Length: 395
Picture 1 (spheres, rainbow, N blue to C red):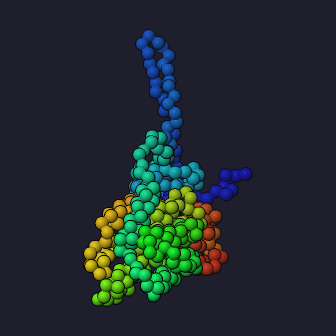
Picture 2 (tube, helix red, strand yellow; picture 1 turned 135 degrees about the vertical axis):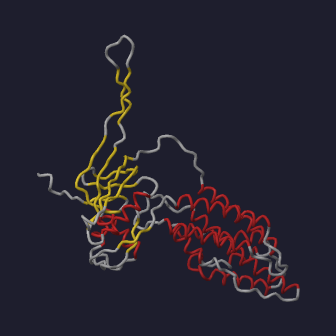
Picture 3 (cartoon, rainbow, N blue to C red; picture 1 turned 90 degrees about the vertical axis):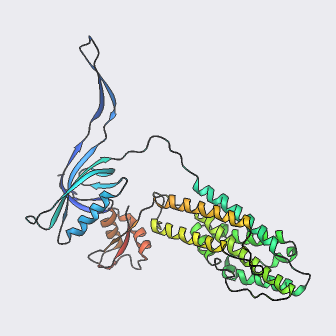
């Protein structure tokens, strides 16, 4: 079988495409030569294989070659290593050490980019890392406990049947947005309604239990979002003591559910699988994680600014502090894990093609077609319209 069979001159670096005609590889062994006095023969100590250095000239050709040129330059200037798909050397992970670009009016329609790179190995020495996910979970549990204590301090109910019935109805109204998930909440509360600490723990438990019912962190966060705005409508405050206490009870209920939902969403975010190599067909992108991070931080900030509907005082100090700790933990966790994920780039197919063909063009891997379909909500994977801008991952 001749070498031309199956050969393609097309390559890519971090999904930026180019063409090559030739390549150079510098390799060998690391040898320490020992020469001793009065000995004619030296001793060559083999210290292992040298790092492979690759140099090749990448060509961006065509009427719109400037776009391909700019895309390739952007990729080689990015920090860190990346995947190189090379027709001579195959697929390997390299770090670019330098490059130069050559263009001229004499040879219009293409740019020649000479790229020098070295194979990227694994870091062999240990590094200290912070257990960011565990920090979020610990801070979330503390915030839930402080929310229950704050509820118990504010809640009180008189021995009036009507007041009990009104409160249980409010519980049903609060959970109406997620009733299909948590079921009836108010029923079991009637027996403990005069024990504020137990009542608060039961209500908070109904919210935190959503994570176990939803089974997947992404689904749990979606459900918790429905409770983020619980009790945002103004609470009417009467002049009589009983009316004022009823207003405080209503606010205490709303804020307990709302705070627990926000805190539980933060805890669920720490359980998201954000490893670049374990993304599956519905991958998270760097921008999606940072957007979620900002949403959670804004929700915590808004919760910390709530004041008592009757007295106008700020929220409980312990709860405020624990929410501050949670905010720092969420910021650190999602920022740290999110920056490891690929970013989103724009890609426009020139013709209508099946998703698997586009996946091969973009990633060199047709099996990533499902990922491409999910990322762009493509209705007909067999007919992806040409000229339509698609979102693709940088890696």
